[in-house]
Image (cartoon, rainbow, N blue to C red; front, top):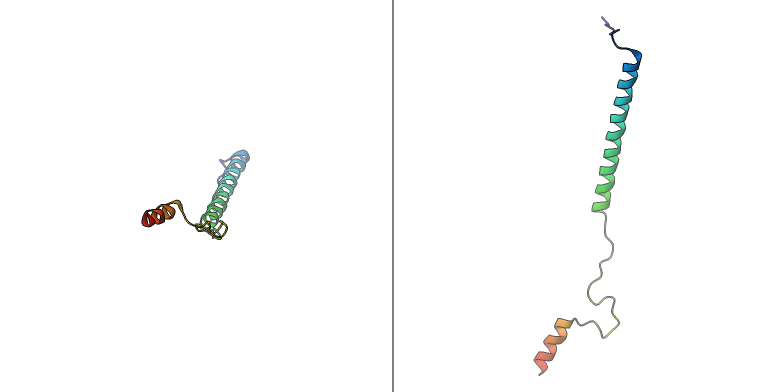
Length: 74
């Protein structure tokens, strides 16, 4: 048995449909943002630069290493 509710006006029905659509759109947008943020946060950062990789040959000693070698010499 199908019972129809005739108490609701067409404007109330349209308003409820709009609210449902807005809620659905917000949920989809939140999912899209969440997935995008997960992809950005977990992606590979690429090549890491280690100390001395960007220096010319012969200039790869750090300040601490230079101090240590000068102490042991003198």
